[in-house]
Image 1 (cartoon, one colour):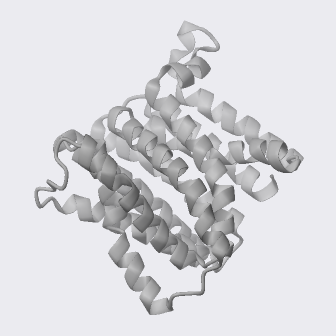
Image 2: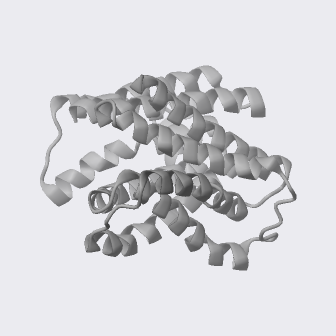
Image 3: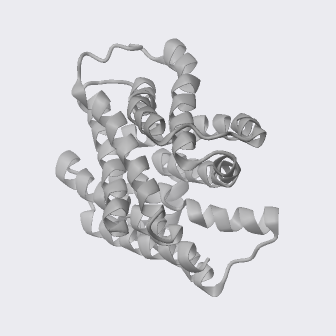
Length: 287
């Protein structure tokens, strides 16, 4: 049963990205209001679930961690949505899934923890998968697919976002231990929505002009469903397995990119995503 919930989380998050991109491409909505809607419209569902479960006691350490992870996640989320807007889903979403690689690197530097052989193999596979995503550029040189990860702005945005998320994940664990998963998810969405409010008001060309488009609500609803499904899954199985299955969102995103936006290089993007998936699973399971 845990696999179903983990896959539901992957499907929900990938579909939220699909609707976000369609809003920005088809409706001409800017990335600021689209990103704000993701968190703002998730709050009611997560809030209802929190009320049903009951508000826990929250330790003081929860509140000071907010000052650390909130600015980082605001920047990382903005970079990610900019990448989703302007670049292929089949490139951007798989690269965001490389965050566990950075978690290994930060663990070495900050905690002095070194990866197992399985983790090292996982890092190699993630690198190979990232290379495969741009395999069509090989005719420009054997290193061209890797150079593209820096030269293509969308790829660069996704990798920087993955790095920031990897650092904030370690901090988020402190906040999670000081409260509980449902409270943290509700507070996270509410804090991100409020945090983006000044950006939305001063930067967006059309703040709060949602135009009655149901997809704004769908983005928030899907994000919340993904969170709740993920929490349910980790309550039934090892978090490493659940997180690994959750990375199937990148495979779904590759298929969405091809069928909804006509993105090219389907075979290599699908192959690269699957290689990254195996590498990430190894890192989470054996890292």
